[in-house]
Image (cartoon, rainbow, N blue to C red):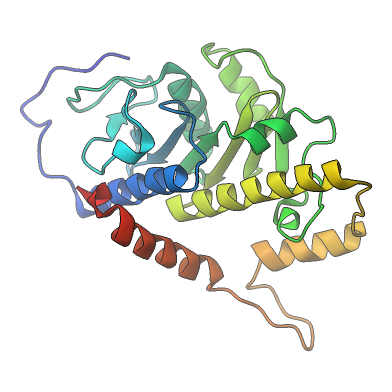
Length: 264
């Protein structure tokens, strides 16, 4: 994972699509920092760039998340090699996890991984994530689990990680942390934001006393309300298909007030 030497074409003007994705990913890093889901310079978020090369953007290793901007993100390939000059290295564990998923899942355009207190705690529970609360039910039947194998530095783990993730949008890395994927940066972030909330609520409920869980049918119905707002509606049922887009727009307005340099 070394930086390549500059080439005559390395510094050509970026496409508008790449610039947009850089700004969205930088925004995601800043939001993870704002909501205190960071682990110093560790953990990672990546977004795949268009094209058959499977190039993706990831954080420059060594920077705090509040230091990350659109321009200092590192572009790498599936082998972990930089494809443009960069003064920054890439976290090897970040490469192992993210390249595996980007290479296997066309829909996993963004991959987000955290080591939060609540997330690590629930990932260490035998029961995993429970449908304790309405927020948790977004993930009902949509969570995969991957057993801990040590720090993710072994390339042989990639196949097992991808197999365990399957077609799910959430992966609980046992004794390690949380991971979400999304077709967009905003989708991956909002999944992680609410997954983290779900973990916090579960731990609070388990500490307080005996938990009451809704029936499976209610959990499944609520999951569909969250994840399939365009489905045929029952008589008297409403939907909210614009909720996530409105939430992401509000988050970007927040960044414009507190950290507008993310776009630099």
